[in-house]
Length: 296
Image (cartoon, rainbow, N blue to C red; front, side):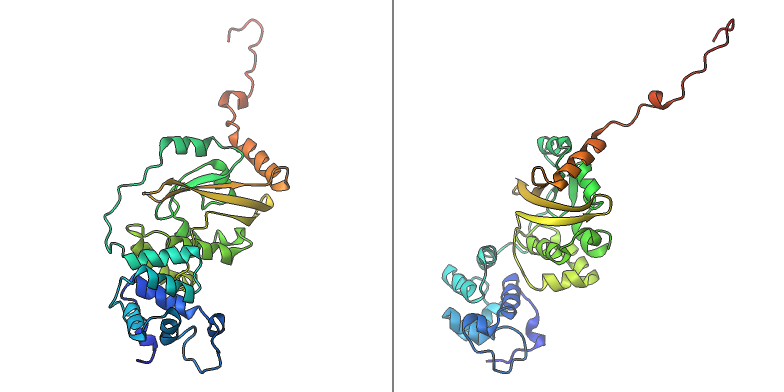
C-alpha cells in the first residue's frame, strides 16, 4: 500500500476530493478503532476505510485517485456509513458517484419572477430577499437592507461575507454563519461557480479552510442573533424557500416570535421605512400674504 503523503492530496475528481476530505475528519475512535498508533495525517487511513466499507484497499485507492469515478450505490452507501455522513452529505456522495457534467451549459441572466418580486417588496414587517445561483442578492425589501447593508440588490453575499469585514460585527454566531454558507454551496453545482470559488480560496483564509472540509448542508431554516448597531440584539428565525429549482433562486425570509421585543422593533422599523417621503409642498414655508392694497 503506498504511503500517504501531502503530495498525494491533489483532487483529480470531485468524488476523490470529497472522500479525502471526509476521511480526514473521522477519528479512529469514532468507528471503533484504537487511536494509539502513530499517524502522520489526521483521520482514518485509506486501508481502514476500505476494510470498514467491505471493499478492497486497491479499489478504494482508485476512487481517491480518480481512476474509478462511479462506485455502485451499495459501495457509496457503505462509504457514507464509514465516513459518518449525515443525510445531506450522503445524498451529495451519491450524486458524485453518479457523475455530474464537468462543464454545464451556462444559464441566461437571472430574473426574479414578478409575483415573487412584488411579494418581497410588499412586506413591511418581514425582512426578505431573493438570492440567485451565485448568492447574488437579486431583490430585497427595505427592511432586509436595514438589517444589513449586504442585503441589497447587486451584492454578492459570498464576497461580502469573506472579503469585507463590514458584516462580521452583525453576527453573534459568525463561525456558524460562514460555515453554513460554505456548506450550502456544495448542494448544487451552479454553472460558473468555479471562478468565484477560486477567487475566494485565493483571498480568504476562512473560506479556504471551510471549503476544504467538503461539508454539505442546504440549511433551509434556522435561527440567528443579529447585533444591529441601532436596534441592538435581534433574535430571528429564518426560512429559505426555493423559488426556481432549476435556476437555484432562493427566497430568504426572516421573522421574529410574535409579541417579542424583536418583533416590535421590526414592526416599528417597517412602519418608518414604509412612510412616503414628505412632500416638497408640505415642507415649504408658508407664503407671505401681500400687503393690503397690493396685488400678489
